[in-house]
Structure formats: structure tokens, C-alpha cells
Length: 156
Image (tube, rainbow, N blue to C red):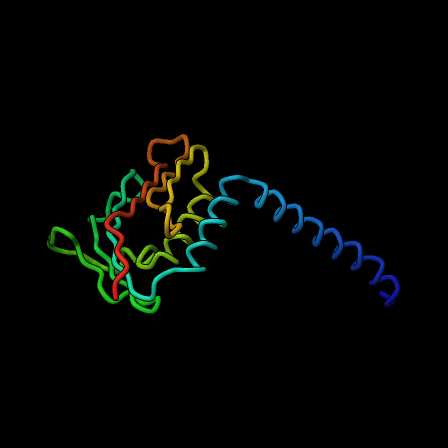
């Protein structure tokens, strides 16, 4: 295929892909749930503490295998402690890797919103901006994901 012919085919395709991406971005940023999450994440990133501790707990049918609540301590964006508040046998800290920093918690909520979005309820910490409760559900019995963060403390 001559160069001019390829350019006539490829250029409109590239333009359509760019427009499609822009439309998806516009829809996502126009969506108040995604926009609110992004706004709170920006607030968190702007002034998050270097060292902090919090407790995270899951509810909902989709994560029933996780034993919580779990206390997590983070220093310089690295989890240094992941332990159960009430120790039990067979605890696996790796089960909480998706939420073992507040930064990852934002990613977990964002990813979960992509698949569980029929009903969404979120509350954010008024000072730091992180989600203190995020419930995302589909209209199926095993479709709920509920995560809550309590006892957040900035450490020296």
C-alpha cells in the first residue's frame, strides 16, 4: 500500500482513537464519584504524612476470606507493620497488599469502582482526604465490597 494511501487510513483511525480516549476521560471526570475520588486523592497526596498508622477492615461478600480488622503502619510510603488487631491463626499480611498504604487504598477503590458500581457510598476524612468508608456494590448477592479505615494517626 502506498504511503499516501496508508496515511489516509491511519490518520483518521488515530484521530478517532484520540477522540474516543478524550470522550472516556471526559465521562470519567464528569462522573461525580470518580471526580470526587480524584479530588480527595489529590488532597491526600498534597499533604500526606511521612509516617502513619491506621486500621482497615473489610465487609461484604466478595472479600469474606480476609480476617480483620488489621492495623497497618506506613513509613515513607512503605508498609512496615501489617498485623491483626485480634491475632488469629493463619493470618497472611499479603492478603492486604491492595490496601497496605493509603495510596494503594485509593487504587483499590478506583479499581473496584470499575466493576462494582450499581450502588456506591463513600465517606472521606475531612482533614487528610482518604476514604474512611467505601462501599461499592453490584446488584448480585456476592457483589458487595465494603472497606473502612479507622484509628488513623500521623506518627513522628
